[in-house]
Image 1 (tube, protein in one colour):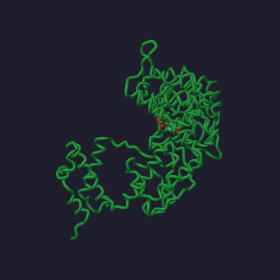
Image 2: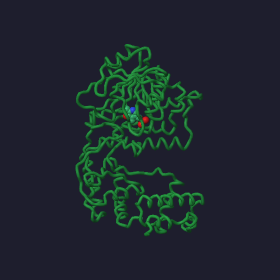
Image 3: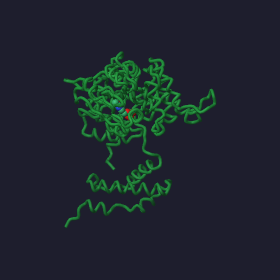
Image 4: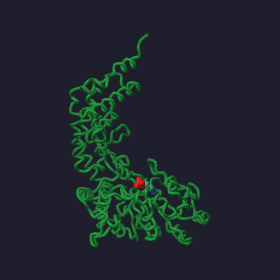
Length: 468
Ligand SMILES: *Cc1c(COP(=O)(O)O)cnc(C)c1O
């Protein structure tokens, strides 16, 4: 009987003891060498079993695999990525890149000590929240402000502090999933509060809220439809009317805004999105939003609103578990400082700069990229095409951001090229659609656009060689 080639390959897999003896690996610590070799063999065995590998690696290829594993074991796997997708707040790519001022402030507070919890005037213990709360109050018009680890934490803390054992009334049209595993209803259940759902998926009226309010009611909640749009036969209750209703019953209204917009996006024809200030003006008692979505700062959850409620949040035991660290506060404070002058915010906060980049500028940037790429990619068509970028990060659904992209292809190996780009150093993430690999200049800085041609060339050359 003929032996299955798979079984033969498995039998011929080298022993780990044999691989760790390779002299080219002598500079690795012994435990790293052992573990990396173990992982490389397991990886190859799995590939053989899956049928994706029909030939065992050569010695050079084993060395490359073991070295790649060793690098991750010693240095971690969080790497630099050039975002050529045109998705500004790419959740998988760390959402908002920070402004230079925020990076500098973070580095400076990181390298030395800071007055994180010290009142320098009086020489007594201070609050870590004091540093950014004055800025947030000034920028939003709120009475008080508080920062936690992220917006999910903000919603959790507010529900736990203001509605323990009570009911939170929310529309069935707003029980949203944000992405990853964040579902508004599930977070609220974790707080110990109960959800009281009202209305239907497409329509909720003020009377629905009114009918649900009773002894048990602790708060009304409105969740901004930040990552989807409802069209057609729909109705929801505006913040103003909901606030009036809540206050008539002596209840707080919380609005989970998702993205924290502090500038006028409509004035730049980007999107109609409520600002934090307008939400408070319409009567919301608390507004929660992320630091790293449209605000363009570090990962953080920001809660602004009435002092009497925020004081209860501040004193809640969960506050300690959800509090932001000094690096986050340094980056957030420096980002907020740029908002003191809106022109400066638009120019220096990368998220705003990218969203606001003019179509003519993007077209010029795409043409320059194409010109640099053409001579480096023999056999691959290079063109400039009109396209659309996205805000991403569950923000501004439906916003149309006209752009120009460099379109590579058609070519049968575009998927392989995209994979080779991801393996580059730094990695490059691109988008494939319509049989073209698309590189959008919108989400690339000047320096990254200069770096890109060499990275694409290296990836293109890598896939011309036989695969390891
Ligand atoms: C994004 C979002 C959240 C979660 O914010 P994180 O900062 O990612 O925790 C919560 N609510 C809404 C409406 C959102 O859009």
